[in-house]
Length: 279
Ligand code: DAH
Image (cartoon, rainbow, N blue to C red; front, side, top):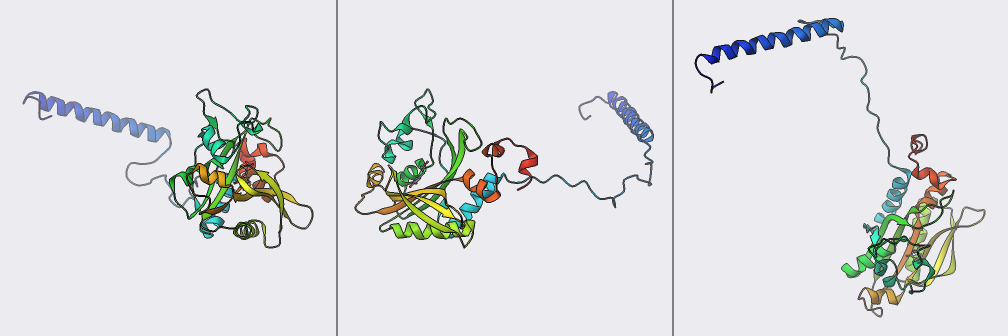
């Protein structure tokens, strides 16, 4: 208004007032048509009525399972670290002592991109990424997605979640591995479970085991684990004569299915609220 001339200013003021009255009129009309008695007092809003509570979401059962496992390892001194889902052959295979002719490198078992990258097929990649950057002592777990070109059915998906674990120090023995995983499994699944080690082979651990768990009837395979292979230490620039460590890997869906009695892995990915709201 300051920029208007002496003669224009009152006209402008008048026009503004008219506009204001027009708007007030419209509001009054609207209030009347809605049956609201406003004017002064008699407000139709009743503050004593209960409010409409917002719908509160939940964490996905896979996220809940990861958090539960991560909490247990936190208490054992393990840090939770993140990795990458798009990787190179070096991190997914070569540094993990997986030879060039190993079947898991085949395009039937790993998704490759045209740029020469791949979608990681295991979280073991994070072992290499962490050791490259840090010196021992190392105690980490690495949860995340992994990808494999599997046909989808009740127990397979082209994407699922794993948790990798790694502990490295001057002296980290197989009994440390056994102690840590026993504590973990009892905390996760109950104090009465039994644990069984079966000899196995993984290129990145030596010796390697598969670990089964039992609640009394039968055994269920839950983890792969072992002492870190000296070749892996060499690949990350550690002296295998000076350090020792253990590693393990587990499938998150498998544990969630076991814990909650879920029979079909596909339920995790369909985003059906009738399923998700149960957890
Ligand atoms: N990377 C393995 C897999 O995807 C799981 C595994 C086995 C991880 C043994 C480990 C290990 O760290 O020591 O089947």
